[in-house]
Length: 264
Length: 192
Image (tube, rainbow over all chains, first blue to last red; front, side, top):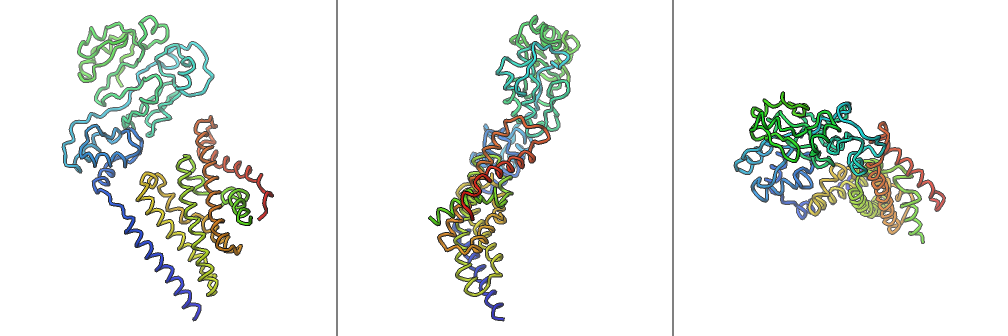
C-alpha cells in the first residue's frame, strides 16, 4: 500500500512537473506563423525539387505570402494548377500559364549517329563532355549517359536501348532540372500543345552534319520555304516557331530530307 | 582522470553506435548529408547531456531513496520524451529549415535507444552526477562522430560507381559494418 502510494506520488509529480515545464515552454516558444504561408504551402506539390530557385516548397510559400502575388515567382512542377490554387488563396488573378514539358532535341540513336571513337571513361555526360566530347562524331548530339535521367526527381526521363533519353510526358512537370543538367543543352521546355519539334541541336554546316549523323538538320531551308510561318533558321539549325502552333509547321514534315522534323 | 577515461571510453572505444549498436536508426536515416548529420548529432547530444543529468537526479533523489527502481524505465522515458519535445519546440522557433529537414527523425530521438541506454547504463554503473553528465556528453559526441563519419562517406559514395545491386540500403549497411570493424581497432585501449 505504502509503495503504491509513493509510486503514484512520484510518477504523478514527475508528470505534473514536466507538463508544467512544457506548458510554459510552449507559450514562450510559440511560433506565430502566417496562416497564408501554410495555405500556400499546402497548395504547392511539396516535392522540394528546387526548380523555383528556393531551398524548398516552404521557402517559396513564405516568399509568395510575403509578396502577396506570383510576380517572378512560380512553381514549375505545380504549373497552372498550383498557380490557380495559390491565386485563389491570395485573391488575385492567376494569369495565363502555359504548360510545358521537356523535349530532347536530338534524334541520333546508336544506329543513326556515327561514332568516331570508343569512350571508356566515367559513364556520365558531364565527364564525357569534359574529355573531348565522348564517342559521338557530332559535337552537339546527346551523349546518352543519362545525366538528365539521374537528375529528374519525377522519373520522367529514361534513356532507352537506342541510347537516347525519352521523356514520359505524363510524369514531366517542366521543372527544368534536366535542362540545367545536360552539358550540351539539348533539352528544351516546349509548350505541351506543340507536338512538332526539330530533333536536332547541331550548329554545324550541312556537310559536317551529314558526315556525323543521318538525322541531323542540315539547314537546307526547305522547311522555311514550305512553311514560312512555322520555321526559322538560325545558326545552321531549323527551329519551330512554337507560338504559331503545329498547324503552321505541319506541311514541312514530309519535305525534310533528313527527317529531323518529328511529331511527338 | 576518471572523467577523461569515461569520456574517451564512451565517445570512441565503446562508441554507442559502432560498438554497442545503439541508435542505429538515425545513424542510417540521417547520415546522407554532412550538415544534417551534424545538426542531428548536436540535437541528440543536447538531449543526451540533459537526460543524463535529469535522470541521475530522479534516480538518486527519488527512485533509490524511496525504493522505487521499478519506475526507472517509465520515469526515464518521461524525461527523454519531455526533453525531445522541448528541443523540437526550440528548433521550430529558432531554426525552422533545420526543423523541417530533420523531419520525423527529430521526434524519433524520443525512442532513440542510445539515450535510454545511456540513462540505464549510468544508473547501472553507479556513476556520480559529474560522471553521469560527462558520460552523456561523451555518448553524444561519439554519436555525432559516428553520424558525421558515415555522412562524409555517403556523400562520397553518391559519386562512386557502385554496382547496381548494392545501391541504396545495402552499401550503407556494408559501410556501417566496415566502420564498426574499424572502431574495433580501439578495443583494448581502455577497458570498461
